[in-house]
Length: 90
Image 1 (cartoon, rainbow, N blue to C red):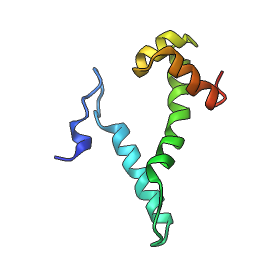
Image 2 (image 1 turned 60 degrees about the vertical axis):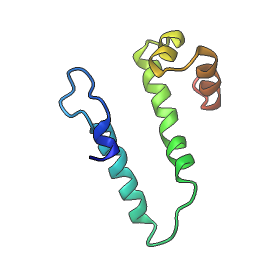
Image 3 (image 1 turned 180 degrees about the vertical axis):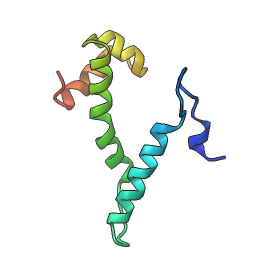
């Protein structure tokens, strides 16, 4: 059993690991473009690619309510605001 299969399903989700599968496919595609070259700082690369759309999507789903968005993300509101400023989402 891999780590992705341990991710809990969302209530009502048809495919519980869909996000993990998309991340895996994107990484496989990325590695395929390297043509055998070594990749570096992959964690920072993935976080930079994922954090902005994650914050934007959650904030949109919360109707712009930062307190609610912070709660959904498991962040405190000050941390969320700092991240929103860093990504020019305010």
